[in-house]
Length: 201
Image (cartoon, rainbow, N blue to C red; front, top):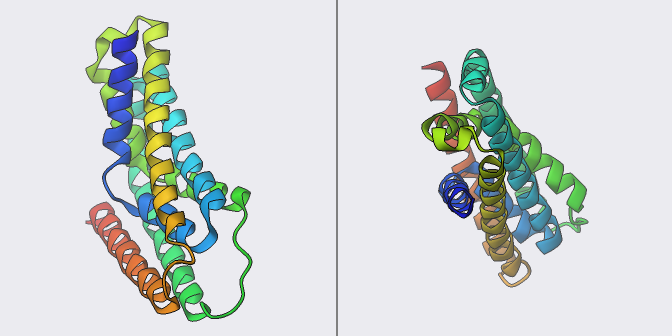
């Protein structure tokens, strides 16, 4: 059971640690709205990892076959959502000097939750692991330990990102905040272009 937990934790870090659009979102929320909102955003991403890891352990090969027809539409939608978020970032950068109330934890959680749910890579990743780890299939306790390990690993990493983003809030000159927002927007648009190109290519 401990082995299954450790495998799950490794899987959770493997999917969470590489820098992607979700990480950029959490960092920006932390810099813009503070630790509470960023931690909620990180919890949104970790919730998706929990849900998808659970579905993968329950369904496995059936899940892979079921999601195959919707992978491309989901990727296109994810790319378009990224474009919308990037445009919203630009609007925030233009209005950076104006007073603005920080986004609430609930809104931050929902934003990242919905965006991460649109990423078919996550559920495909966990489903593939479920297929490749048949020793977990017949043991309910081992599957549960895997899911818990993956979810806690994801949550811990997202919390680190939230803390990094929040630690920069209010400590940098206004121009730096605008510059980082613009830089994050460019990264988001780059990810959006990559996702759309791969989905439609």
